[in-house]
Amino acid sequence: QVQLVESGGGLVQPGGSLRLSCAASESITNIGVMGWFRQAPGKRRELVATIARGGSTIYAVSVKGRFTISIDNAWGTVSLQMNMLKPEDTAVYYCNAKETWNPTEYWGQGTQVTVSS
Image (cartoon, rainbow, N blue to C red; front, side):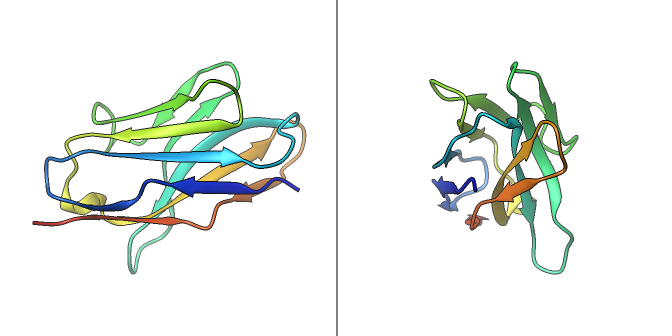
C-alpha cells in the first residue's frame, strides 16, 4: 500500500507562487505515473499535471505555462511549482499515483491552496 504525503499549501495573493510536494512513503516500484489533481467547492476533481517515471508530462490547459511538475531527486517524490496564481486556482490539491500494470491508484489527503487578496 502506497501512502502519499503532501505539503506546501497555503494562502497566497494573486500573481504569487506556491510549491507543493508529494512523497510516497512506501515502495514505488510499481508506480508509473504521479501527478496532481484539484477540486474546488462545488466542482468535480480535475487533472492539473502528471509526470511519468521517464519524465514525460501532461498539463491542464488552464495551468500550462504557469505550473511545472517535476521529480525531486528520485522517483517517488514530485513537486508542483505554481506561478502566476489566480483566484480560480483556489482548490484542494491532491497528489495521485498510478500503478503501471493495473488500474490501482493512490491519493494523498489533500492540501488547501487559496489565492486571494
